[in-house]
Length: 447
Ligand SMILES: O=C(O)C1=C[C@@H](OP(=O)(O)O)[C@@H](O)[C@H](O)C1
Ligand SMILES: C=C(OP(=O)(O)O)C(=O)O
Image (tube, rainbow, N blue to C red):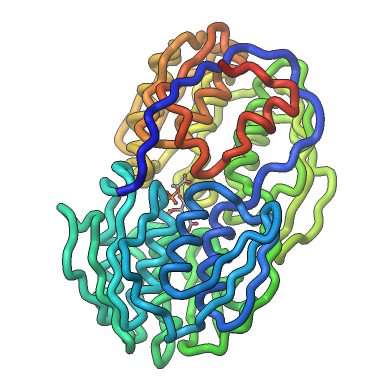
């Protein structure tokens, strides 16, 4: 499944100071959800600022296969004419989610709660990712897995139920994808679906469901958790969605500005949702000069312009309970840590093993290839920084993982020797404007 492009290597070399203002693309998590809620509500949902990355576009195509009319009406502007809850069509062809865990898993929730059957598939990376974590709660609700790859992996043929059982489900790991899949299936249940998470994960699904008119409560559970309860069969009403800038994409621009000497950059409109801001919080603890210039609300989220200046950084201990708020930022944090003074100890990274690649192993390998001392101890990553200097000079294997590619290219902008990645094509899944935006800041240092 998935049309695989031939790998395209890319090298980044040291560049002069980064200067200017830049706005990262729309948030990937919110963009996926905008398409899905558009599908599930009858009428027209207008979306602006959508991330036009391959992951999100695949979700849009899948929504069209289930009956929605999905149209691009301008740059980042889309409309979705949804069929509404309970009225989805069975797709004639396989739903191909490419590289996207989020798109495939959330859509499994949607299909699982409807009386339709759909085949889910994706690229070689997606075919390695665990799906039982989604299929298990969906089975409790009445969905059936008719076919599956080894160990509950894609390709998966899922038969949903027209009458899902409302369940109370405790997520086994902190995962917004598991929580969202259960809630999306629970939308079509007669009764209340409850999800309990002991570590709170990103809350975009809850916020968007409430915005579209669903009755939903979210209350604290234990020290760091949440209990979310959703009343089934709501009247979902389409609402305009303005997608704020993605903090996970912003992370690469912020890191580049911190690492390249003399840089002074403003990254605009970055979503500062507390369940997404662990990276900036950690950088500040490391001594990063990040000034919050203007806070405001965009599309129901707090956003801010961040002024970032080159900074001398010091290693820190990153607590395990911060992982959900920066789960996609550990690779770039590890790269930043390679330039810090002293050791950075990142705790509790077991979930990194089941992302687009085994990010724990691949990050360590990439650092070693570039002369950085690193140890994996259990589920922890320990990086020894070079106090402002990082040797570089390595070739990094990216294993179809966009964030590995971008993180090590950022390393190359500040390292002593150029850094190469074996494939840049996957960057298009989440941040197609990565190179042009860096070039806009003066970092036109890729070849
Ligand atoms: O719900 C989402 O949009 C996401 C949740 C996270 O995954 P998990 O739910 O597996 O932690 C994250 O890594 C992914 O990039 C996006
Ligand atoms: C883990 C990621 O995404 P997904 O799970 O959607 O593939 C990511 O973007 O880093």
